[in-house]
Image: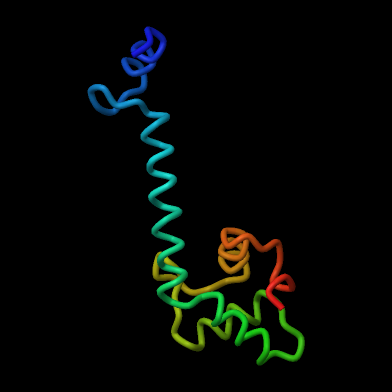
Length: 101
């Protein structure tokens, strides 16, 4: 370890020999992996596409309502909102729902 790393560990470490920056990177990677797996398990993209096809004039709020009506919940178990749906679309690499069609 570098001297600078040792100083930072003494100031910010939550465990002996644990580098907070590396731990944060590993945590982020693990959370992203779990979220990706969850989206796949609930077939989120396909359910969004189906909702878009069912709607005459789709909006994120209307799509979220269809997901809620189907009994689908967010990764934390809450109801869908346009904001949560937008977050998931961005996490999947889409800027807006229009990109799915």
